[in-house]
Image 1 (cartoon, one colour):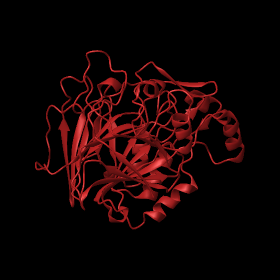
Image 2 (image 1 turned 90 degrees about the horizontal axis):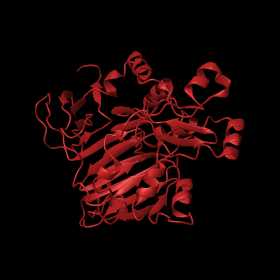
Image 3 (image 1 turned 180 degrees about the horizontal axis):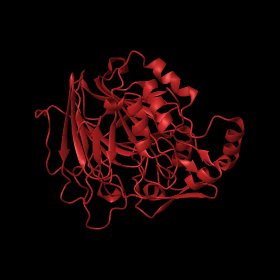
Image 4 (image 1 turned 90 degrees about the vertical axis):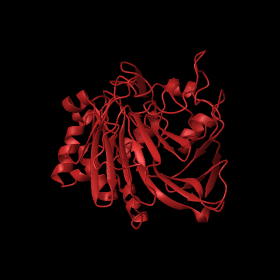
Length: 389
């Protein structure tokens, strides 16, 4: 097993902060919270959803950022030869307003997950875990390379030691690469993609928050998050359910949207000329049925104009399958606090922070080995858990 260490210093995540700008100590707080049931307080982790596939997980004094994309509405990303996409939403927080970040999980090297502004701005010694392709593009480039990039293949693991923590029961992270395919598993399509180099290899992640010692065998997982990455529903994903058949997956973040190249319009008018490269509503439901997580959050579904599968389609599919109580949906009009513990579900609305124009949090606490409060943020989001709010 690979091992790395991260050092939670107060260094900014970017190297080009404007003059007279200081790094915030933390992510924006919520202004007010209502909970039902009314008691919480043992939560110890947060997950801030910025938009697209960008999240920031905060636990045990460290912050992990996934797939950093901080472009604004009207800006464009390059997705392949002759293909670009316009962003339709704003991130919940700007890149230069981020607090300290200790680790980046990059599912693949594509501009809607690692945009050019992010690549130019991030601190070069910021630890990044990514694919072999991503490592080649970031660490082995001739000019201005990143210096702390690790690559994982599917089911390869890395243990993340947190410097400054010693003893037998100290916070530890374990990250396992998960399989994924960004293009349909058809020989002709795969050969064309290899020639055009449009869609790079992609990973999902199994992120485990736990405790242990300097001995990797001592690691004990308290909370397990599966992040699908940009994948289609392919046979390789079945291996995940086999390997984790006797291990609880507490949360799944599924990348949806039915991303259609060159555009959804071409897909509607000339279907044979279009290619779907991320899960649509039907495939998202299939993934829930395969992985069987306790809770699923759909993300990556409406931030760019190449998304062709509306979130409402996914909601209808989930409801028809009788799984609505297992899914949290985000919209763009408010935000939700959700508390989960054995045998009960609690819901409550949050108001937006006064200094953010769009409300960014969804939260819940899990009464498991570790009770966890997770906040999700998306350019102002209203969450619905099982339609019972």
